[in-house]
Image 1 (tube, one colour):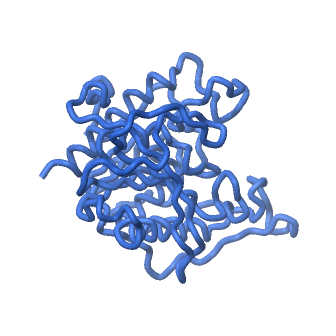
Image 2 (cartoon, helix red, strand yellow):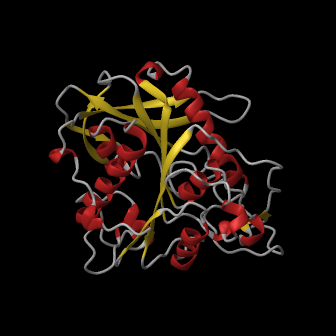
Length: 327
C-alpha cells in the first residue's frame, strides 16, 4: 500500500498530548555477546527544553530530565554506514515529544567515531544482536525500565539500519548477493590479490538473531540486495512502513531493489517513494554551519530536507501511535 506525505498526521504542535524532550547518553554494558554499546536516549519530559550543545549539534532538550509517564512505548534506532546515535536526532525528538522513549545506538566498531570493523561482513551479523542486547537492557537492568511497556517496542532503521531491522523482524539475508567487503573502512573497492586490502567474507550464522518483542517497524532505504527473494523475508509479518528515495545513491540500497522488497514482503508495507530525494536525505537536516560541499548534506536541486523531515517525522509518529499506542 502506498501512503502519501500530504496525508501524514501533524506533529506534536497540533496534538493534544505533547511533551518536551529529555536527553541523556546511556551505556549498555559489555557481555558475552558483544562489547559495550553507547547510545543516546530521548524521553518525554515535564520541563521546558532549552538549546543544548551535543557534539557539533544543537538540540532542544532538557538534560537528564525525569521521564514523564509510565508504560511508555520504546523505539530503538539503528543508523546506517558511518552514522551514529545522533544521525536521526530530529526523528528521535519528534517521537519523544509524542510520548515515546527513544534509544539510538552506536553500533560498536562500525559508527562515525570508530569504523575499524565497518566493512567486514561480521558487523552485518552483529547488528541485530546489538538491537536485541539494547532491548534486553532497556527492559531489564536499565534504571528507566519501569517507565517502559515491554509489550510495545518498535524500531526505526536507515540503510544498514533498515537491513538490521528486517533481520530483527524475521528476515534471513543471503550474503552471496553482496559484493566482497574490504577490511579497510576507507576502501570501497579491493581485489583478493591486493594483500593490503584483504576481503572479509565471514560465514553467515546458522541462525539469525530475530526478536519478536519488536511489534512495529519503520525502515528507510534499507540495504536490500540480500533480501531479493520471497523466501528471505517470508517471516517478516509485523506492521512495517517502508521509505525509499527516488534518486538513491546508497550502497546496496538501489531504488529498484527497495521497490522489489516492498512487493516481496508477505504483509504489504506502507510504502513511500520520496520524490527527488537522495539516499542521505533521510539523515537529519544539517546544521546551518554545514558546508554545502559535504556529501551528507548535498541534496538534489530543489529538495528541501527541512520541509521533508517535518512530513517524514509526522508520518513515523502517526504509524507508531497506531501500532504501539492504541489498545
